[in-house]
Amino acid sequence: MYEKDGEKYFVVDSHMHYWDASPENWVPGAEQYAKGWIECFHAYQSLGPAETHWSIEHFQKYSEEDTMKDLFTDGHVDVAIAQPTYLREWYTEGFNTTERNGELLRKHPDKFRLNTRFDPRDGDAGMREFERNVEEWKPIGAKLYTAEWNGDSRGYKLSDPECYRFLERAQELGIKNIHIHKGPTIWPLDKDAFDVADVDKAATDFQGLNFIVEHVGLPRIEDFCFMATQEPNVYAGLSVVLGGLMHARPRFFAKVMGELLFWVGEDKMTFGSDYAIWEPKWQVEGLVDWDYPEGHDYDDYPRLGVEGKKKILGLNAARLYDIPVPAELQLRGDSPAAQDDAELVEREVAQA
Image 1 (cartoon, rainbow, N blue to C red):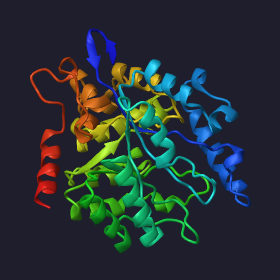
Image 2: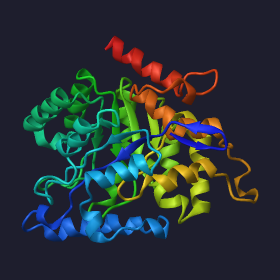
Image 3: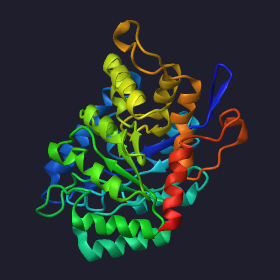
Image 4: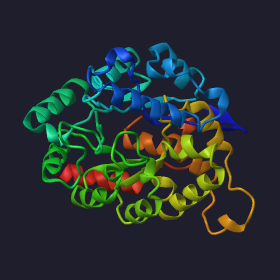
């Protein structure tokens, strides 16, 4: 729990990772991609405050102890949602798998929620793996990486028929939150595979699922906002928005936040630190203290008050993931957040 000026904030980090990108895990023959990927990630860390930067060696593989300290001891996080990213083309044991994240869940069940993933290009074998993970770990969310390489394929779309088969099965298995990486390009992945257009069709066709668009499609902020405002089950995941822009590009950050608040609204925005690219501590503190810069450029954007910050930092994600919130940390005289949208999805699931 974070407290500032007499206000208490329940913090859910809805987008964090526990990866192994050490050289020992690089696929022989694909070392240039494994190395280039993690070095690109590491370069993004430079967008945060200088005192939070890590060495590349520490960044490649940090420990469980590091994770617990950075998130919970120092980082103000109450509950963290671990999101997998496999990248098996480059990392022998996977970059950040359901099983690796599951180690944290088993040891600290009160601190973590675990998501799994699927890749529709894996066909029936991939479906069986997805079903086994759901059976073992009981997740209610999945993370999709549409730009990931898989054999000769360098990406897929949510609107592809084979992906629809997996989304239908996800719904049947009780998965209700689909997180999709749609944001800045990471070398050597292809920029076009991060486009947000495919979310529009899938969100319309799967009203029983919530689609949390991680990184809000940056730099395609207008495309995302106009799509998300018409789709009640599309949410804005603020990972990268906060870590990548709040410190390094404060005026652009204010513009992005203003557009999101105007079109999408504070009830459909979720905090994610994108750990371990960035630590959550300075992001939580920065958002609590944040206001628009001086000047008239931001006059037509909605203001973000304490109540809205509480929703974004934890209450919205808590509702999506059925995470209990202590009474003293809920909104005064109200239930947590995004109630209408969450109830819509719950009704659709019940009717399915």
